[in-house]
Length: 114
Image (cartoon, rainbow, N blue to C red; front, side, top):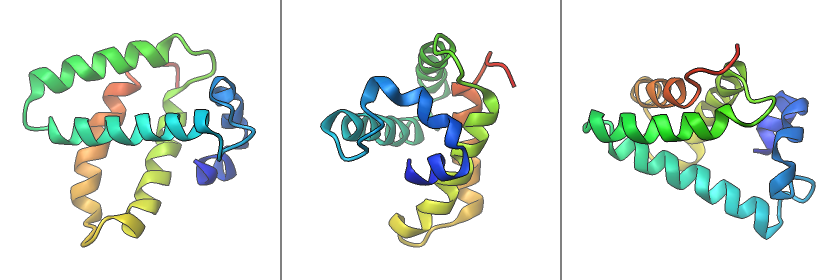
């Protein structure tokens, strides 16, 4: 998330409810774990479209009610994830990960303003 805030400083205001001013706080670390855990679950359901679509609809609804969350913010998050994945994924394949992340992030941002 530090890279997200470097690339889009205004994004920090979207995370005040999880104590973003202290990115080492339990609240913010809990948020990071929920995001990464959710991403892990979604990647594992790519081969089960009905379940994945249901999960994405739920997450899209959660993001739609948050003021300031936009499709363009998800595009920045995609860049952040693609830039950081090589550090944590052995044998990182950018094409394979794009094919995973793009449908997930598009689903989560469905219905959001650009």
